[in-house]
Image (cartoon, rainbow, N blue to C red):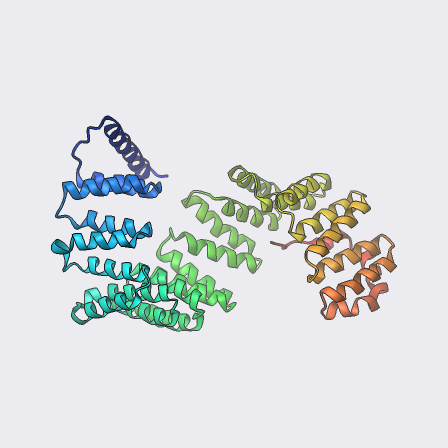
Length: 439
């Protein structure tokens, strides 16, 4: 939090304390419109709708000809799912604000939330007939929201396209566009639209972000990264673009670049457990296990019941060949989440190194029972049995694996058992584990 944010937070705290003291004493003082709006925002953020409504009513009493508090009241009712009260409020202020576009759109929204979609469309269509070029963008956006409620994503897409062609700077329309693309699976149309849109509006961070996500859907990771990097170049505080970019770099095993993007987020925003976990994973894959453990521990301080963090701490100690420590973290991960096959496989390998073959065997069995369709766990279990000179049992496991997992690799494994046995003897487990595994 910077100094400006800290000063604003202090001001709001003092304002709230003074107001609540007056409520307690039953002696409310007149307040400026700006102060009432600050109080309203505070109670809305704290999810205290009753107190927010009290502030709205005060604002309407003190400033009856200001549309701001009337609009806030209607939005508050809509947010609470009280469309009936929103309609009453709209009727009450019809005399003063009947020609206000925002009130008409709120009525359309109320109809839409009530399932009266035809009524909502009628209002918007009538407004379109006399709308200025400046207002058309908002009307197409409102139309898209109605189509979203109807789950008509094809129509929603074209309404949003029209909204952006009328008003390229409409950030809400850009955000809704990505929601529409995901819900309607219109990724190809998204690429075509955003590429053309960016030819005319090259500094639209939202358009670059949407384009990046559509490229990502088709596995065009390099193009997606380039799009996300354009978005962060335009807005160096674009958190989600940094995160998406980092995730793609991680998938491409470019851990240094992934780390760079995650650290950009860390420098600018309050850390969350996912961010700290991701940074730890990058350090782990880069071989800096000390830094990795440091960030995993920081993540645990934010959430002490995060099974993935315990698992990755175990991975760090496993890579350091501290198998007893690793096993304790794996056990903690399983205690929190007992249906993750990779946790059981990791613990089984720990016990194998610790010279506890019966425990290792039990955890390998658990892994294949949780994910019988996954060939890798059957193969790892069979290798363990081969390394324990239990070739007949390894063959039985592979035959059973064919019934559950299938696949060409498993089909030939029983016939290659002697060769696999030799490979298992030649290849140490730590080398087989390698790097680059991720949940």
